Image (tube, rainbow, N blue to C red):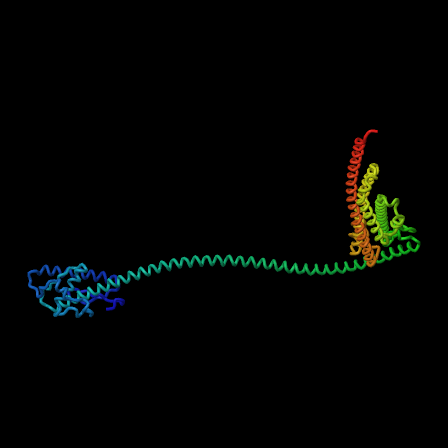
Length: 495
């Protein structure tokens, strides 16, 4: 019989009762065990009560031999034909052994001589034992299945709790994301409104910018027209003053660029523009006069230095008349001649000082003192001229800054530099460019003159050092001469 299928255990009642069917396996197992115990007890009591009666079967073979002659693995039937009259001894011995193994009373004895009933009893016992073995196996399988199911249930319960926790977390996350989505949607609506407002403001700003640009262009055209009118007025005034005989050449050989009248004769300024123009003209004229005066002083100082250098030369007793005439001419005409004259004079002075050793006794100490004083005066004069040159450079730079501002059209910045308050220029753009070019050339020339003058001063300083050294040598020679003369007087015989 298959152990995996539901089966019906067999129970013997009064040795030949029919087999009853029980509803469950647990009840079947319990009832089978109880019926077997009751059957064994009744059988033992019957055996004890009939001890004196003769038995049809009395086992004469020892139990160990009967068990040894029986091989349980040889029988594979259902149990109905397990015990026969031929193998009664072996089967009864095997059943007795199995009953002993399961804790029941063994050593069955059959008192009646009915062999058929005895074989049925043995077969029934064997079927009960087989059913009991199957029940045990089935119980073990049920227990294993129960353990496995319990373990699966625990795992399933744990998994279910984890799934529930994960579901709860997912629900919370969904709620959080829903709230965040709602918040972001609200922010998006606010930003969309801001964007729409910004676009409207930008459109209005573009319109305002375009209007401002148009208005600014109109104002620029208006300013340009006023500037052109002002330039025409200034040019007419300059032309009128030049036609009346006002010279644009200043004493000293300097030609003033774009001469302007010193005052506006004949009428008083009627508006702020004319008053500002008058102030600009007056300040410009004043600055040009200062520059001309400083240039004249520089010329005189240079002439004085040149004259003094020539006076130091013994071969010349007076300055050249040509040099005097040269210093009165414009610098563009005498630039090369003055440079060559100064270089020639310095060369002659250097040659004279180089050959001074042969004429040292002819120089008196008084003359050396006078020369030292003269050198100091010249040095002070050079320092003063350097300061004047720096002031002139600053003035030229200021004028250059004003011209640059006027050239660039930023007249208000130029007015702020000179603390004026005008709205236009007094010259056209072409005239401003020409004036800037000429001023740059004059600035370059003046810078070159300053460098040449500085080199001359440095050379004069070196020559002064040589003169001082020669003075010391002269003093040493004079002292030697005095000692020699005294020694000669001592060595001469008395007369």
